[in-house]
Length: 498
Figure (spheres, rainbow, N blue to C red):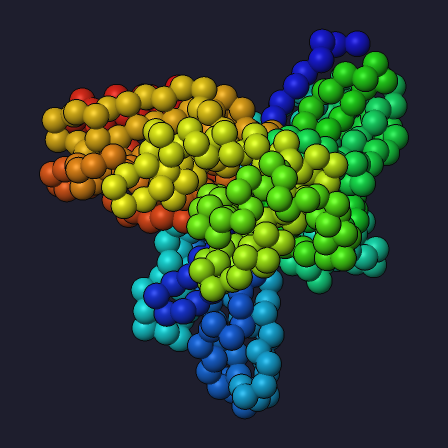
């Protein structure tokens, strides 16, 4: 057998777009290969209530969305798509207005492309929403995966349509967020060229891992024996009913008969779910601990408890933060004690005491290193990132740079399944010790296009459209041009791209 080939495939792009007109759409794409050539498939979900509805000739109401997609190699246009998307017609605008999904397939040979998309509501006088990204098509004769497509539903296809693949009509799930009412994660993926590399049957494994730690979720781990072929399509399902709230990766991999990983594909998603252990189970476990012992520290000091609980916010879930943000100061001592102990029981059901003390040591470190005259260390951006992700492998510091604000670039070689994660902090006030998080290439963190512009003290640097959103591309530097106005800009970009 040929030497094992291992790849980590980047995430499909997914982002929420909200125009000035209030138009709300969710857009993503996946890259595919086929015997007839390479292509991308785009998915756009439009929130019907955010569109402008007009009366049609039939007397019903309908919205019209103009979509323009351009794919360029350098200054040359390689492909271009412009079309008008019509919503379903409705008779009454006072009732529920349905959402609608659009799927397009666009031929795109191997190469590197600048992808520009413009989306506007034709019936609104507001400007379109414009977005740019870089697409790299890199299919070869090696074993590779397509991008992972999340699936809302699928059925056997009786005829061909825009959503038909491999004999199924596949309705895409255009989001990477799973609320409580969704208890199954479905996905579609294709594997290519297994017949050229693997002569025997192989295992297609798929599992969910916790994003920060990279630990497998035991109940979400499956595999299936597959036969080699030019194209191997696969639809998988995982039960996530008991998956707690948090950030996760769906990992799909091909494993040979010799237990060698040949190729791996990763998809980031978020889960909101309070239905794990019952509240009664957590409470019963918490009751096993004496509130006056060393586990809780000085549990009879209300001020100490408030401080400790506030320090836990960087790692708290979306369900735990409202108490910290809104109820902490009003809560009585017994309520604070109960919250504190149950918080750590949820993180380590067997030994919550050790879990708390390990975290407390990190809180003390950020307090020493990042506290300011007005903020505790755990309330600063650097303190929050440190508590969430641990000690950086490398920190580049630029405290004094002509023409630039003081800034730091933190590098983590590996966070869970992610490699080479960077965080850019800067001090625009140039006073004190507090640095703000400006940009990151880590999924779920702030992502600022042309972030070096914000580092410039002159504010004359201009690289085009700038925007800030949750990071979705783990390889992107967020820098859109190849020219630099200052030496420090070049140095900052080079440091970020190491």
